[in-house]
Length: 411
Image (cartoon, rainbow, N blue to C red; front, side, top):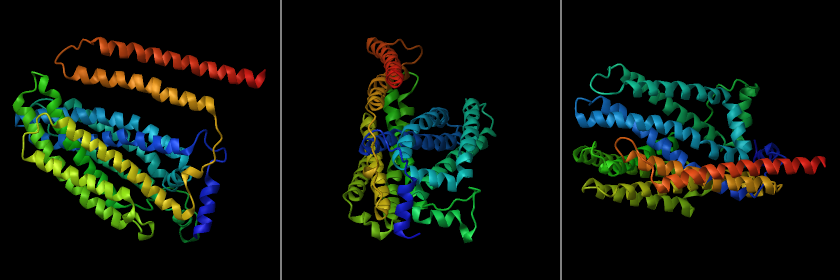
């Protein structure tokens, strides 16, 4: 399709009812909520791979303990990445609905298959988790774990394909009608960019390495985690993170080279900011490799989180660059203000989400640093009461708005 026809198609496929508030708000929230999602993707993939590798060396007590711990991290991480992936997906569907839905329809079988492969993969990994305890763990569960991890990688690739196909609307009609015949099967993978996908796999190595260093610092207050084991975990984490950061630099350069020159991504400040930041990460982890990282885990993990934030912004800059030739900008999306729903939405994020999220994070953080039964302190108790109260107020407010609207329309 030519540029004019593609532009007309994109604007025709937009939701004619528009969105309830300014699109910039949704764009910022999309980027912001994607960060925790991708961090748990990174940690889960890295932990799963480490859990399997350490399982093969379980004759060593340190490796055995690490395998069991990382297997559990991956089990919890997958559930969290799924939950945290809902918000950025919803915001994507709101302002990039033509791109997302068209790509999903073109590869519909893979979209449906994603649900099944994720379910089967998680069940396989959960079985590996249940059996991976002590020297008596049967050797066959290793292959069950490998299968589960393979399904996770496949699901990551499917998400990559769906996102990447959405960047090429000029090819949608060609993909839908190959050789002039309509293909409604949804069985095909039409486009992918291995260097881009590889960048996010390398990002998993970096983030997981930083997580492992922080893991060593987090458990230093517990008597059941010996100093030698934690030092072992921190050293291993610094080595892993360094390799991942170097690989990210190389793959980012390859990714940028693969972007069409007409998009001028090399001249965008965000590209160079991300490259420079990754260079700082490489230097930080290079120093960490040659020193005792005790007490540095949270700082290095925070640096990695900052990198994830820049990657999130870079993705959006790149997506806007791909859409610019077709005169498609999310900032031009039709807006029909719905103040009540928008206020409820903000209260949900700030009130319910903030307090409830803060309560859960604080509770989990403090409980994990205690061996045995954890007794909540005053801060955790107040956060718990506040989160319950905020939820009750939100429900009451939601019902009140609904009743008000109903009475206004039927009075």
